[in-house]
Length: 189
Image (cartoon, rainbow, N blue to C red):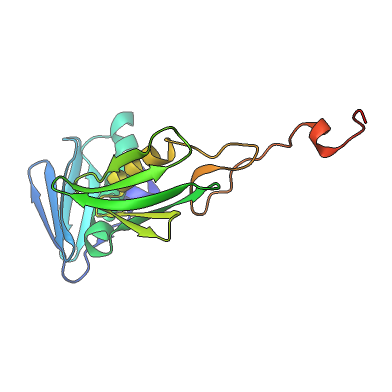
């Protein structure tokens, strides 16, 4: 059994949790999230705690046990605090700007391509721009925020020689040394 799965999830003040069959609905001050879980997993509310357990002892069920517990904990954290991923754009002349239209928010990235790249906010997320090189992606669902950040990073991941591109704010990209001839090591005069 999972050590993480055995831990109860505490329900904080201002959050309501409802279980309807094989789905769980979490409402909080920032919004509402819903998740379906497998029939082999049993979720019970006992007072101010959510207890996750398994109905059988099969290997596949045990593998899902801790995951379901953490997904529920992430839902509670999302409706109370929300999640933020921060991306940094590195490169001369590379920048980002935020625009809104009838379809919602979008960011326009200038990354040295022949055209600007537009990325729309997914439902449940929004963008915040600091300066012209920091993008903050905010939302309730940790998976959706992380997926959108990864999608934006994949447009121009950091390259290994100069480090230019889009990276997570705390990421340290792998760097390679350039050619030895560039460093002035004994070339022709």
